Image 1 (cartoon, rainbow, N blue to C red):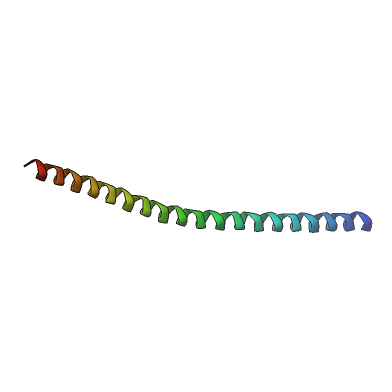
Image 2 (cartoon, rainbow, N blue to C red):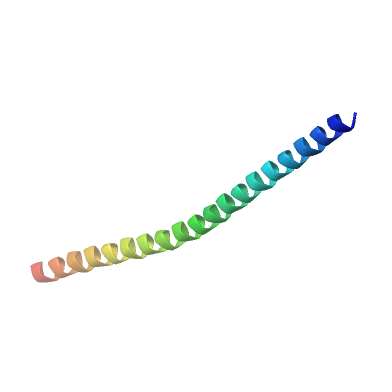
Length: 70
């Protein structure tokens, strides 16, 4: 009976270690995901700014063309 109890305790310890390892991996992946989300937000702001600059340049070009025609 004691031998069986020792085996069960060892199994429990191994499962606990495996669980803690998996939990740590999950937490690390979650942190990387949060960092990536922030990077995407920054990249989207750069893209939005670039799009606005292109639009402003196109409007300025169109206005300049209309001015030269007049």
